[in-house]
Image 1 (tube, rainbow, N blue to C red):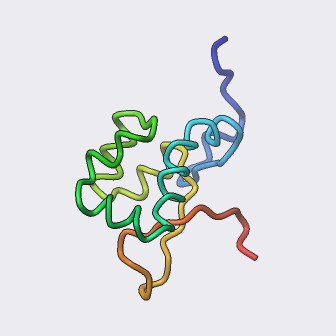
Image 2 (image 1 turned 90 degrees about the horizontal axis):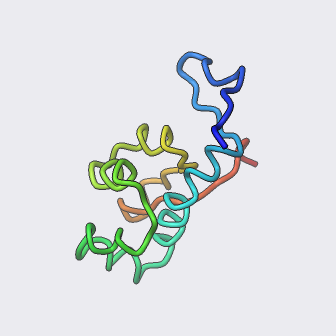
Length: 100
């Protein structure tokens, strides 16, 4: 079944996080959540491309992660939040909106 376009998809400068984006972004979000553990961050830093193979990422998602293109990750369905500067630089974590 083809996906039906929604009225709200053409809001300029906005990425709307709906059910379709949630499905599309699930692999990115699971990857991001994995980086909450130090061992996983070390494994990712050691060999980023190899670490990403365990997630069912699209080629576009993989490229966005490797290029640290967080805006593209959001466009591809990710729901990401960069942790404060006190955290390791590769740490990304899943959050909900609005923040509490």
